[in-house]
Image (cartoon, rainbow, N blue to C red; front, side, top):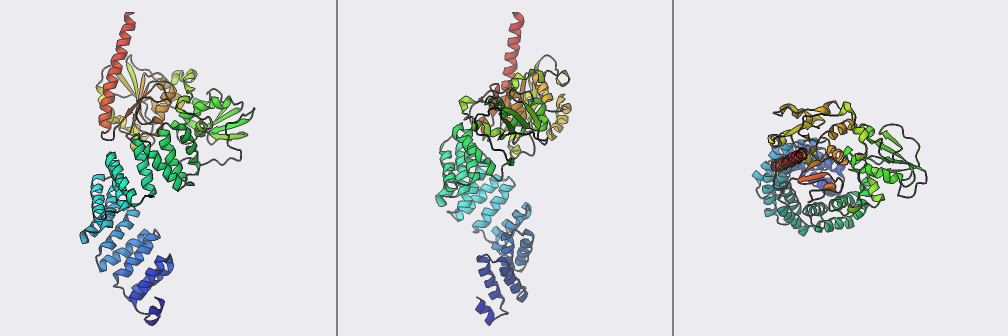
Length: 532
């Protein structure tokens, strides 16, 4: 190639060809020099602009890539260039421009399988899954061994709740690429959602392929816990600290992490991780740690400190951000189930129902008229990675308002509480004045029932042994399992599960029927007691 350039130094195609050779060997800077030289020699060369755009795309310089591709298509409209222009727009989060580019590529060449696939991906990013499925189908018809298209086809089918079709698409992807890691993970997790242990086989296969991958171990841990295999699940869950996407960073203490040995009077720091609900769920282990003979310091989120400072076995409760006292060893709160070898049958009870003094503060209590008093929660933390799955709108609770003898109160905090102004009836909002979780607990203690989406309020009410109905999405959190209406974590909780085929409206109609029966039973019991 270089000899050709030496013999014809002003030959633009030779410089373009040299750029291609350099790009293939990873010499991007030299490739850009060659393409730029080809463009100077022949400014009307669409290929040199296209190839230069490809280098910029590989380097994630999307603005430069888009500029080069636009110059190329201005000289000659080609499907490949429009396809790559769409990729650059898509990576730059310019979804509308990406969609237009992929469509233009398809118009120029209807047999362009990659353009159909990328058009489908752009649609899926915008949650237009039905249209995306059609595009992925076109891609696989044009290229029957297109594993990536089958994978994306399955993902969109799964998003629409068609698990059987999704599983079939994932299996086809594996037929062509048996070690396709994303497919192994997705198919494994999907089969687990269907209650099949076959899914664990796929996830174990992924761990065998990538034994040092924290993400692979994490993807195995969650399904194991969801299926109730706590013995293996907690062990795999310990890999969370090595996963770069884990939401709570490792603390990096110089003191060793406690492994369950006798403490013999030593001071141990138990520290919260992840969200409020996780702290409320796993603080039940603090008394067990104390029984190992040590002095227990509990570090939690500041707004939950006052509630938990009287937990049995806790010698000192401090808020995150406060100065830490001296301690000999430490343990993350959610590592304690692993330390104690917890199984479904050995989950310790929550200590919060013992803290009556916290719930009896008159300034924090909420009083209602003499009827069934029900607290409502419809939104979680909007920053939670799965909030779109679990949060709903207050309007979804309207079917409950038709039930006689029920008085509702909002337990909602955060931005979602603004929806109260649109509720057609009076909805008291005592939580607008609470200081922390202790005040919220006082309000809950005066209610008969809490109905909530999967938020910290579900854990607070359950830990207090207050009747609580938890509204679960079609993809539940691992701790609620897959099928049962009950959970060993909270004896007074009842789980309502949204189906893959039905929406929240269908679920809330069921909740309304159950609430009416709950109220009738309560009224009947009250009448019998009055007669006696």
